[in-house]
Length: 166
Ligand code: FES
Ligand code: FES
Image (cartoon, rainbow, N blue to C red):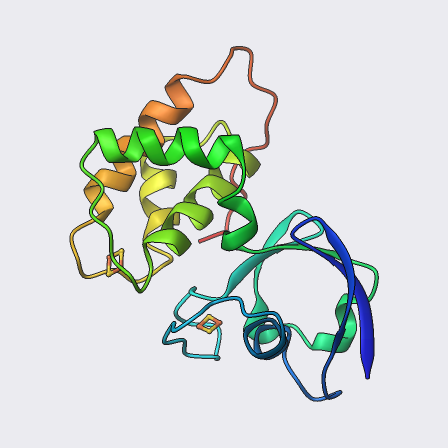
C-alpha cells in the first residue's frame, strides 16, 4: 500500500502494510527516529510528530490515515531557524545532550509553547512532565520555556491550556 503525504516539507509516497503504525513506517521506510528505544504504546513520547500541525504520538496513528496530510518530525524541526534559536537558549540554561530523548524533549516543548503561548510556569512544568526523563534536564527545560515565552512579542494571541491536556 502506498500513501502520499508531505513529510518534513517533501511531497512523497511511502509504502507500508495496512496494519502498520505511522511510527513503524517512518522509522523503517523513511529513516526517522534512528536508534531510539520506543514503547510503541503511547507512553514514552519519543515518537511524537506534528500531524497537520497537531502534536500526536505516531505509534498510535494508523499509517493509512495520513494520506495527503502533513507530517513534521523532530528531524524536520531541526532544520528550522526557530529550532536553532530555541536550542541555543536551552544550551545557555545548561542543556545536557541525551541521545535517547533530548531532541524529542525540545520538539515537544516547542510544540507546546507554540500551541499555548499563554501557558504559565505550572502548565509548562506539566507539559514537560509528559515525556519521561530521568537525566535531570527538566529544570533546564522549565527555565528555557519561561525565557522563551518572556521573549515573545506582546500581545500574544494564543489559547488557554484546556483542562485535561496533561
Ligand atoms: S513509541 Fe512511545 S509513545 Fe509512541
Ligand atoms: S532528556 Fe533523555 S532522559 Fe532526560
